[in-house]
Image (cartoon, rainbow, N blue to C red; front, side, top):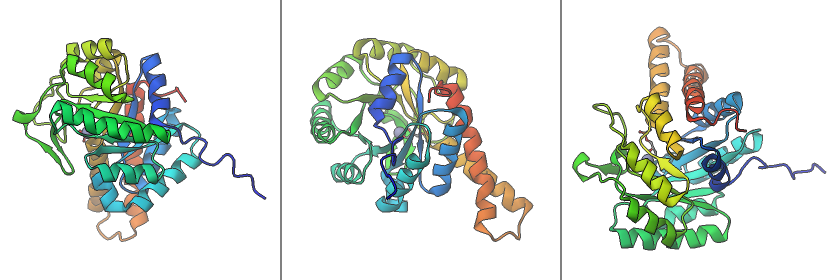
Length: 292
Ligand code: G3H
Ligand code: ZN
C-alpha cells in the first residue's frame, strides 16, 4: 500500500512560519486566493524563490469558491509544495466562519474584531484563541482600524484609527494571540495618494509586544517603505490588490491582442504567469526568499 505519511508535510501553522520570521527579521507574504490559477501562481513563485508562504482566503473568497473547493485546492497546493505553506482565513469578522475554517483544515485564522470597542475585541479574540489553540491552529487579530475597502470590509478614511502601543501590549497579553495586525497608515485597495506609514509606531509596538506583526493594505506601498517596515518588525505582509491587478492587466492585454480566443486555458495562462512574477518580486523584497 502506498505510504501516505508525507501528505501535507509542507502544510504548517502560521505561527511556525511567522515565529521564524520574527526571530530572524524578515517578512512572509500572505496572498489572497480565490481560484486555482491564483493558488498555482503563488506556489510557483514560492518554489522559484524558495520562500515560505501564506495562502489566505477572505470570507468573500470563501463565498465565491465555496469552503470545500478553496480549502481542498489550498491543501493540494501544500501537499505538492516543497516549501512551507500555511492556509489562513483573512479578516474573519464572523465567529461561525472562523469555526468553519478551523473545521476545514485551515492552519491559521484571523479574527477581526477591530470594529468593536477594545474590551469586546479582546473578549472575541480570547474566545477564538482558546478554541483554535486547543486544536493547533494559530490566530491573528487586529487592533486599531485599517482604512479602505476589502470585500465586505469598508472603513472610511475618517474612521481609520492607528493602533495604540499601550493597548497593543494589553491586547497581546490578555488574548495570547499569535500575531497582531496593526494600523500604521496603510489602507486596503488602490491608493489615491502616497501612503504615509508611521514607522515610529511600528518600532514602538514591536519593542513593547515582541511578537510577529502584520501589515495589511500593503499593495501599492513603495518597496523602500516595505523594507523599512520589515526592518522595524513587520513579519506578515498582506497582498491582494496588486495580484488582482496583475491578473486583470494580463487578461485585458491578452484579449486585446487575441480578440477571437475562447479557450479559458489560453486566456488564463498569461494571467497566472503575470501574477507569479509579481508575487516572486514581492517575496524577494519581503526577505522571505531563500528561507525555505
Ligand atoms: O487582508 C488583506 C490585505 O490587507 C490586502 O490589502 O488589497 O491593499 O493588498 P491590499
Ligand atoms: Zn486586510
